[in-house]
Image (tube, rainbow, N blue to C red; front, top):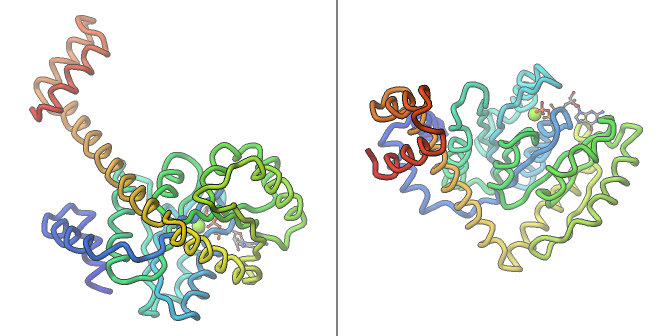
Length: 303
Ligand SMILES: Nc1nc2c(ncn2[C@@H]2O[C@H](COP(=O)(O)OP(=O)(O)OP(=O)(O)O)[C@@H](O)[C@H]2O)c(=O)[nH]1
Ligand SMILES: [Mg+2]
């Protein structure tokens, strides 16, 4: 546990030995069921994750949790709430929780998520839950890095379905209508059913909706069953491998992009040839497209 935590920190610091250790670990990873938990801020993702952890532990399964940016403007102060809630798992050796903040990170967030998942997986965790606020690019990206995507919605968000439709309806495998104790839960469930009706099944799996009350724990058993059923469905249909490969590809692509972006920033700040390109732009001797082409060529040549 302590070793894993230290390794994750060293990875974030970019230490070469840590990278080497991760390479060795990667060969042994690939067994864990990775579940991405996403949805609008404040819908109850953390509360639900906490319940899922509790349930998995009762069944004797080990769990890893990666919480991406647990503070949102809507439920500000959630970090503290998350910590207090999750605290009860802190002394449990079968649970490993890691929070990653998006704020202030330079595109390295997804890389940290991938690294953390690899370490947790190689540690032998049966279930890995990645919580991310499902708004914006990061949410979708991280959701794409999972075998199963759980979308958590809750009533009281207005005409939310219409608003979030585009981003959220395609990515989910299992949908939780959380805060089912609230008055509008039925309405939300109905509109979600309607909205999902038109979405084709994926990997032979028909998307399911489960009503939950994360606060009391009601419905969480059924949710856990559905997550497991999705895993079994993937395994039976041969889609498990496909998803695993897609996850590796997503990590690969993301790391390539981060690498290139970092190089570009560095070159813009300090590379002499790139400074010349910038000067050419400034006096309109060159247009942005031509400058970008030259920049790219230099970048690909490694100069
Ligand atoms: N009424 C009701 N409230 C709930 C339920 N589940 C969670 N909540 C409350 O909703 C608020 C937000 O819960 P969180 O679990 O922090 O939500 P989240 O989606 O993780 O929020 P962010 O990480 O900030 O996006 C908290 O005050 C919870 O206590 C529920 O089933 N019913
Ligand atoms: Mg949260």
